[in-house]
Length: 408
Image (tube, rainbow, N blue to C red):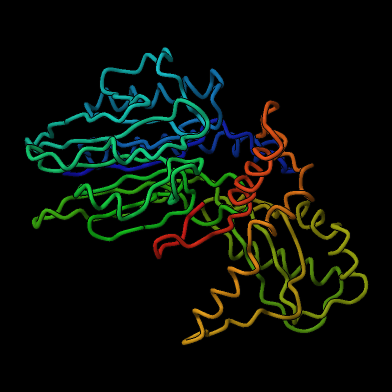
C-alpha cells in the first residue's frame, strides 16, 4: 500500500506584506500554491499511489476565488483520470457548512462535520478504513475523539484524518492529545493545521506534513507532502517529498573584516548568487555581529537603503532579499537545567500566569488579528478569554498538559 498525505494547501493565499517584489516574481509567488499542488498530483501519478489524503485548509478562506476552485478541480480530475481516490476534509480556514454544494469528481470523498469512515480497496485488495471530519465553522472547540471508532476488525489498515492541534476541550482547533489518538489503535494519523513538518509519534506514525508552500517569512525551509508506504511487517514508512517552487529562507553570510557600503553590497550579491539555487528563495538576511561596518554601511542597513540596492542587484530570478538586519552582539546562552528543571518550571508557571497574559492583552487590543476575530456580542469576560486564547495562538505560547507541550 502506498499513499500521499498532504495538508494546508491554502490555494488562494494573498501573500500580503511583500513590497517591491518584481511583477514576474510576484505572479510566480501567487501561483506557487497551485504549482505545488500540480507537482503533488505528478508525484501521485508517477508513484502509482493507492490514494491521496488532503487534511484541511485546501483554501485560505471560507469563500474561495473561482480561480482557486477551478485549479483544485483540475488537479482532482487528473487524479480521477488516473483512477486514484482522494479523501479530503475542510479545516478552520476553509470551513464549509454541511449543505455546501461541491461537485467533486467521482474519485473524491469529502468528509462532513460529523466523524465518518470511508473504506477503500486497493489494487492489491488491501482494505483501508479512513476516518475523519471537516470544520463546519471557523472554530472546532468540541473534543472529537469520542466520535472516532476503535480500529475496525475487518480493515487491514485504519487511518485517522484530523485537522487540529494538541490541546484540551474548549481550545479553538479540534484539540486532542497523542494518548487519545493512540487509544484508537489506528495504523496512521494524518494531521493538518500545523505548518511545520513534525512527527508526534513514530509507530504508529502521527504526522504533520506541514504546508505545501510557505506563506510568510517564518515558514522557512522545504515544504511538501509525505509519501507513506507499507512494509512487510505491517508498519508504515514515511518519506518527505519537497514540492514548493518558492522557499522562504533565513540566511547569514560569512563576513570578516571591515566593510564600506559598496564592499558590503558586493559581498552580499556575490555570496547570494553562489549560495541560492533552485527553487527560487525569498531570503531574510542576518549580518553576523562580528562584521564591522563603517558609518555609511551601518546607516544603509538601518535605513533599508542597502536592502533596496541588493534587490536592484538581483539577477537571474533565483533569489530575492525580503529583509536585511544586523544580528545582535550577544547570543543567548543555552542553559542546562539538569536537576533544577523542576525549579525552573515552577518559576515559569509563576511568571506566565493568566493575569500576565491578560495584562499583555490589554496593550494589544488594537492588533488587527484580534479585532478581526472578536465578535460584537461578547461580554467583557468573554472578550478577555478570547483575547488570551488568540494571543496564545498568534504568538505560539505553549503550556504543558499531561507531560506534552501543545503545538500551534
